Image (cartoon, rainbow over all chains, first blue to last red; front, side, top):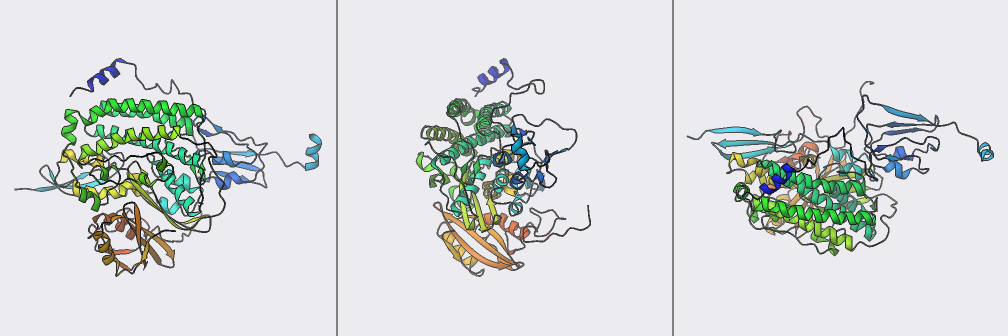
Length: 123
Length: 359
Length: 123
């Protein structure tokens, strides 16, 4: 009847298996999907594929004014936008989003469109 | 003279993981009648599935429940693939089995912990959940998230597992085996635990079959039904053995789930040893058209998906029937005649997942 | 496509279900679809030895359909749900929740049928 007593005594005498969060934080794993990181707005071509594939509808892309808007609190961290972006300008961060004080939407504006002849002369 | 009193059990109760209301009509300490009522977490997910396109529905469907999330996605994706006549590569089938069985281990360990909590054995509850952390960590290392893993997609799986991670999964499986052996004694042979579970809530084989019980509820009464014998994904090639008990009481249901954990570990190790090389997904073109029924064995029983497509990228109808929905009517037969102090134990043996039931 | 579908009228429903029970079939569930223009399509799924057999009936919204809960008690939950969410009237259920099993008293009636939503006023 007292078979589990050995296990209980071992647990009482060894150190606790819980971590003292937030003083001690765990290292994030390599492939973890924590939160969507910052977009490299100079590479973005404003094609709108990430906005149409997003299941939570949290991305808004405007091609005429060259802007990319992102509602961080609606994101379900599913990784679809990172996988389908044709120029690979989106990256997934390992660390989870910390606590926020206010709801915020990030909006990024890209550089104005350059004429193809001018771009070739720069390279 | 016997007076009848009505006691509400729930919807909030320390032993219930999700809200479920039971109206118990009692005579002294014995229950005479019990009527369950649900509806506290209805989200209308079936209606939302008609608005999203069929690729985005995978994310919707795996969030119906956190404890059986991989199998929900697997049932949906298998239904769409059979509707569009897509044959996925073998490596994808084996990877799906590995993640599904890891998910089943975590679900059974969670239930074993809650069950120990139901009769007050807190030390065993904490030990089960501490052992479950190893499984959650390996799921995060291989797929990116602890609970809702998002690895299934129409046409295959989204991530591959490297050989270092495969070796780590085998190590975790060995540890789970050892931990279960230490806890099996406490669940099945302990004197006080046996007093609370043997002979409580007995269901006969005919009652279980006619009430439509599924999963470990039915297998503990002697009804030998398990959808993994149908051989979907890679189960046909792994030599799967069903676990069946004959007694039909709470002890038999605990024994079925404890022995299933050993079977899951054996399936994972066999799948890793036989894993074929190749692609993990094939590209998908076109839209689903027609109707199909797809069934998969979840940790709690049989889940049924009825999918109807009409040639556009939105589905016409997505209907989900989860196993707890089929197990709740057994309460109408098990509860009358039992004591009030046994109600938490009885309620937890059906493994209630109310968010699955109400979608 | 689904195999083994038997199309019947609602008057034959109780007779066919009785035959299924006598042959040892287990009741799985029912699926209701709104086909538009007030028509509903109801499929009853039965299982024996991992093989599914289905019965299909066509009904109008508000039409009375007999309940099979005298033969299979477990059908009582799904019949309540169908009558609340789709407006299919099922008579003779063993336990009748009176339209309040899933929906709150002040909720919209039959929300899962094909409804149109109009926006009133500007936000």
